[in-house]
Image (cartoon, rainbow, N blue to C red; front, side):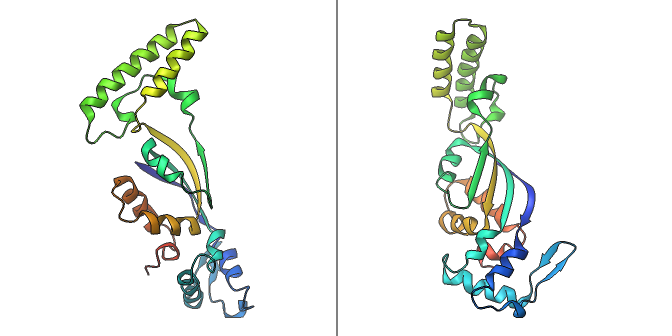
Length: 204
């Protein structure tokens, strides 16, 4: 699994400002905007943590903070990640359009346990890809393509560009921390490395 941050988290300044709207307490804000980067002050941090602990309906300001990343992960992990809809947007590399662009290799899959068995499947798929590319009959091509898709293992690595709010990440951390899939541990490690990750994890 590979996670590459495309753009550092943005939206801290308007989020902190909006956080103080319910009580008209903007004059108590002690965060500092320096060269376009917001440094969260102690009083603002204290209020944010209070709202975070009060529940998702109270820490609405976290819905205004976003981070963008390219994530390359096996399809079995994406199946679980696709549970998250609110505060998450994804643009995928297309299996339908690009799968036939080149022969597959073992490196296109998450294969830490079953490499020998996987290699056999890859060889079968590559054989069918060769047959697909050499066939002129469109009906036959469609049949071969369907066979390839049905044979493609869930360990096939797919890349997606993902936009996530801090509110969505809080929900993910709460539900997936300690999950048996190693990919979730990798994802959570990345979240802990984000700027002001205490807004997500409550750990200062």
